[in-house]
Image (cartoon, rainbow, N blue to C red; front, side, top):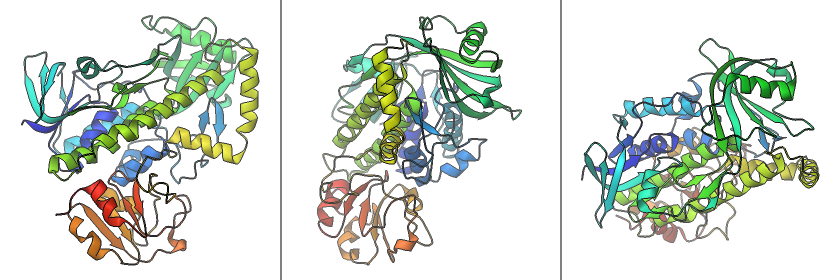
Length: 489
């Protein structure tokens, strides 16, 4: 074998996965067909659950230290949501995809992993021991496992002949990174009576400290072929149509047309090959959910591949990747389709759509509805199907970031191992045989030490390396340890 895992695609999903694999102690090769990393911003923000996962690996503070990444108000279908509507202490941050990629490039390089760029996949074959990947330059690599993180037009998915069902794109909208004058007086979403609309989101600042924004334009007559370049005149016309003379273009840094296509792979696992990120699911980039969902795919899969490589993964463990992440991806596609309908992307001003939006906007003022919508957008509402979920409300959810006095739960997860919180010191003997893969932490479980933004106090619980609770006491710990962490040593 040349490596344990070959990751195809060096975007946010692929680099997040590579970092997880290194944390798990797994040899990794990361390849990308592009000869250099893109300088395009693409996705514009990081949601709460992804911020939490980065915090679990000690990456959040270094990431936020890379520049001005302001906290931004979330939305659902253009309807603003309060900052902490999802009840988490880490609200949405404006961190463009280009910053994420640059950051992970440095992180991986510090760990000795450099993306092999200019490596375009041309073929793959797998057997019961591994996968052989062939490239257009005539080279080949042999790995135990291969992960496709190579985007919406995934070569790996095509070679697998995996179905990619869903809805084809029926229209396009313009997305552009710009500097504007007068934008501080404009709202995040603005609609005109004739159906033209614009959305504005912060993107931090440029090298001179000047504010950058993501501008999205749509409405009647604005749906053009993706192949037609977006011009400065087109952007100026869109701004003037929606804002009059109040908002002006100072600089157009990047622009593209995006479609409302919505597709999801039928299977995320094909033997020793796995699909992740846009290779597994595509949709309108609302709330940066594509990038965030892909990074969550990587956090879910990384430790499981590590367990398989190290030989302690239960037989079913790799199958739980599809069982957990496929429903999560399907839920994102549903909420995006609902949002695109309520936002009237085409600018039809259909009276039925307008009536539905008016009713929905009123509902979105209710705190319970805000929490529900914020949970959908931020990824914090995801609950994986797990044994014991029916018996305890925490099982299947991301673990609350409890304050345990000298440390927090997220800090305990930085090793990439499982964590058993044992506040009464009652499970030392039971958990001992799994001590090579699960860290046991004891200490008082006091309500006044709980982060108020993380959830209620809790008793003993078992947390997977990706931060999800897979058991909560007091009974049946041994079956849970065996189910998620294999046979004891």
